[in-house]
Length: 242
Image 1 (cartoon, rainbow, N blue to C red):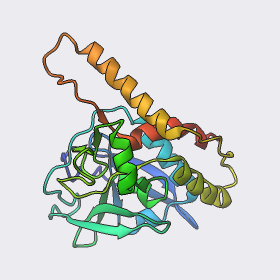
Image 2: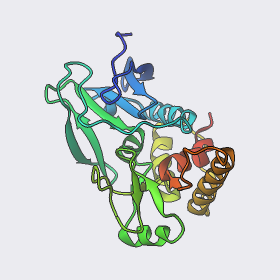
Image 3: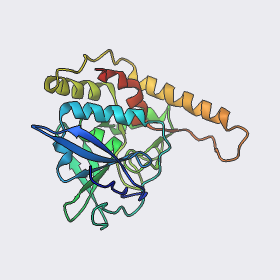
C-alpha cells in the first residue's frame, strides 16, 4: 500500500482499503469515515468491479452511525495540496452527483451519498416528493456537505446547492438488478414495500432515543435531522448478503 493520504476536508490520515479492479488487479481507495468521504485517484471510481461496489456499500453501512464532520471549505488535494474544484456530473443511470476534483488530475473526493448516487442506489427527489416528505420530516441532512436542510422552506442545500436525495426502493432494486447481471454471487432482492415510511420511522425513533439520553444535558436542542441516505443504507443492507 501507498502511505496513507490525508483527508481533503479534516486533514486527518485516511483509511486505505483494497477492492477488485475490472479485468485484473486491485484498486486502493482512501476513506475518511469522520467526513464520510472517499478519495479516488484518477479514474478509479469506474475501474472497480460490480462486486466491489457491493463491498463498498457494506463498508458504508458499517460506519453509518459514526458522527459526521461537516465538509471544510475549501477542500485540498491529498497529493499536491492544491484547492479542489467543485464538479457536477450526470450518472450513467440518471441523476446528478457532486464531487471535488484536483485540477492537476490527481483524483477526486466524493461523499458516500454522492458515490451511491453515481452508482445508481440513490435518486433525487422531485419537488412534489419533497413537499410530501416535508409534512412528516422537517429537517434532513445534506448528502453533499452534511449541513441541515429545512425542506419545509428549501428544495436544495443552501450551502452547497446539492439536491435532496433518498435511497429508495425502486433505485435500489434497479441498481441491484444491474449488478446481479454482472456478479452472479449477489442474492435476489426482497420486498421493498413501505421502505420510505420505514426510513422515517427509524430516524424518528433514533431521535427519540437521543433526546432521552441527553435530557439531562444542555448540548441537545431537540431538533430532528434525518439522514435519508444513511437510514436507507441500514434498512437495505441485507440485500447484499453473500
